[in-house]
Length: 207
Image 1 (tube, rainbow, N blue to C red):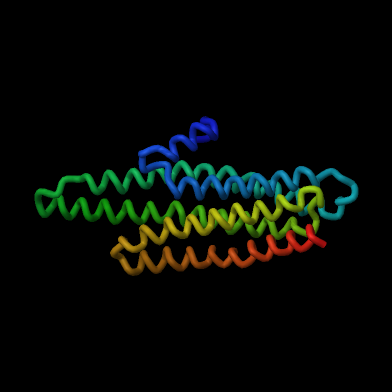
Image 2: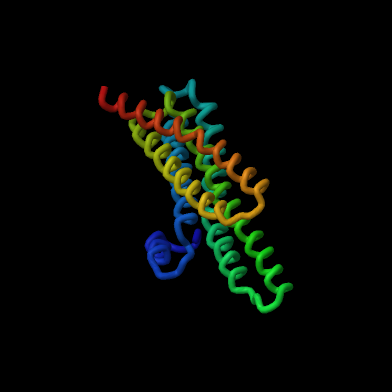
């Protein structure tokens, strides 16, 4: 997807094919949030009036760039993971051995399909935290973009959570379900910070 145009990718998303789907869209949202964090940093770094924030901005910029690339990779991985689940459901089930192998493949595929959006949720939460780090020191001309970054990451986080949940209900191993659910809940805590960032920016804009 990194080699295609936005228009082409959206056409694929809109098509009758099951992938890319919501999971990939969540990854792209996370990547957009990270890109906006980078933009704000780039428009703040090097300006004398923001010199005291230079070190933080450079540190955040490096991390935002890493997260953007990771999010795009996860968007691609999501489509592959979903395809793996579909392939597992198509395995033969004529004998007990085939049924057992098919069930094992389905369960493994579901765990992998949940792991990818779980990773997206973690990236999205990290982007929200980066947005919070640059809120006070950012160039005021792009203050709204800090909020949009947090908003995009929050959307990615919520979307990723839905894609984790849809797989969790079909995973039979209770320990695996608990592990995935706990990890997801940890990332979801960042939603509160995203909302606070958006409210803070709105307040400053209207002041």
